[in-house]
Image (tube, rainbow, N blue to C red; front, top):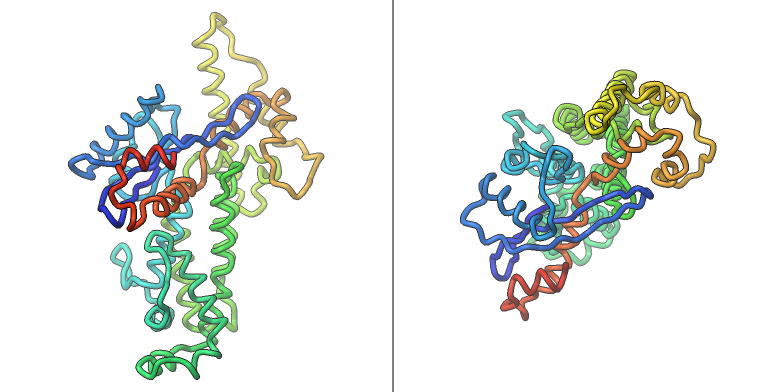
Length: 376
């Protein structure tokens, strides 16, 4: 879920989606609604109550087996810290760190120390009419890249009042920044897919970005400082949950954690065994038998030692579990649960983009409930 304030009317909306993987390993994404938020405040208890009312319309409710994907604001953390588990939006997190790198002096009482990159960025913004969305800072990459493409053509046509600004831009540094940001743009696209699971990609892509932040001998000094800041933020502030580890280990091509550390794999194995045991205990409680299901943990070992026969390039993890759910039924149950969690709230952002096209300056009197019906 996510929130949006309509620019013409100032009305607040909250978009709510539902992800579900059924027994046949089909991923379903449902738009529950883009609801007008007319509550008295934006405090955590109020948000929680509002979302619960939205879910009640469909006979749904939050409980310890449900997950909530949201942004990483403190009020959202507080709103969904009981009777469910909140998973932070990875793409929103990355957006925020890039925004800090290019615009902030301090973060969490620590200096950002990216002055050269920030100065260049400020000069480019001053010369560009259309920049990027405030909520999607990755759009700044496209702004910088387009500016670099036309850089050599600007001098003869640029307004005299902006010549000093233009002359202050170091083209070499601009090019290095654009090249450095390419992997980040790739990660945004990988995490924003909506037609297949994405949570299992978070740990490998996080490691990929950390590798991209390694300093090279010929890096510009500004790039060095940018890499140092982003690497520190990714290592210390990008929080990985148990579900990230579980989603990775239930992927047959990622279960060895070749891009991670041995401790990552050990943690994922411990979590998967614990999840299997908890599932077995739940089945025992709900049944009349007094014996634990046999070979549960042996199933885990067999899965970890198994090989993937069909190693095609497509990342079709659901097809794998369609073919192997009977061989590894307990791990399949874990996979269905965690792979239904998206890595980001991209669907809600796209819903809001569609809303902006519907609620235009010529349709400002459109009723909020009517808008919800039109786009949901």
